[in-house]
Image 1 (tube, rainbow, N blue to C red):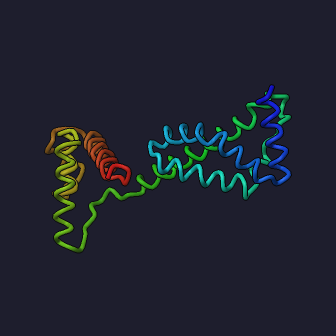
Image 2: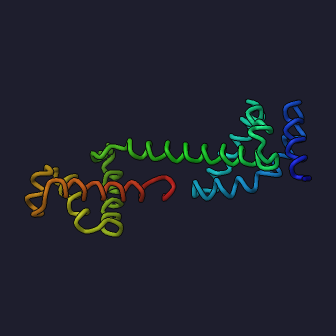
Image 3: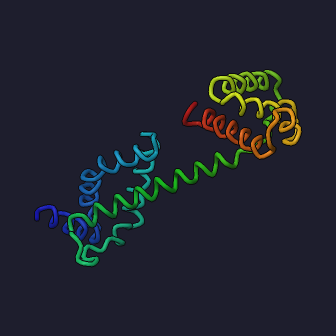
Length: 186
């Protein structure tokens, strides 16, 4: 019963503009939300940034006004917790989706730096990743496509396989390399 009253009172105080109520909500739920966000994002710093942004919006944009403590006669203790949990979960999912879209926007064509030393370093790093991380057939198909500039049809003939298999193998190599060279990995 204490929990029911506390969140209901906190919500009323928030709606009245109480900064102390906001601070109480922050301290009460931050740890639980941080665990969930860290688990979803696999990065403590990103999770902390996301939480800070959310709590700033929660207070400044008055997101707490969206919480209806009487919604369908639900348990008053869990309505705020559920709202906060759902909000952070949705923000994490949005962030994950944006990051996946960003990685998928990286072109499949080779990047050609203007500095020859930079080009050699990138070539060395990609070669190392191809040897260590990418399956042999995918690595071979990637090399033929991007280093020797062969068409899918030429690669399929040389590897004695279908064009679709070549495309799949190159796609596998690109996906692994993107993951290997993503900012989170570096």
